[in-house]
Image 1 (cartoon, rainbow, N blue to C red):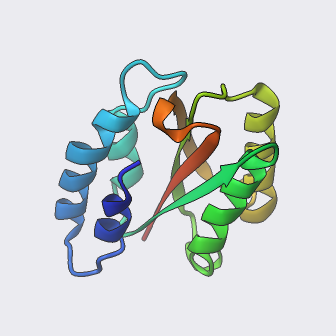
Image 2 (cartoon, rainbow, N blue to C red):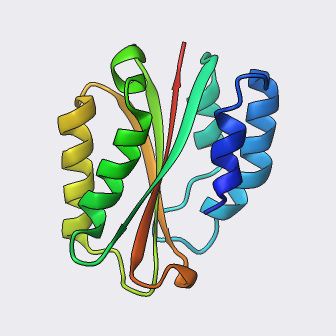
Length: 146
């Protein structure tokens, strides 16, 4: 995934409109197309609508525990944003390599996310393959709140 998106979304000097344009221009093409579950412009716009604070982080996992490692990594990177972001909306994109994303991995990711963030949040998610990742799994998580 594009690591530079992380830098752009965590740059507080960008306006909300600039962030929206960057995200739609650069990320939607990555997470839309021949994916297991794609995300589209409408998903992005819904997340951004009415929000003026955003954080984007990417977590990585490898091996048998790659799903839990990746979601743990991304939530650790978000840190205090989880507690501070009242009524946050989340967009999660899971990208897997040559090893397919297994249903039990997806369930573990979602359960871990709910355990740490709560089950009263709004989230849209997608998943797709990127053979360059090998046996890695990456999770991009975008949080948006007022």
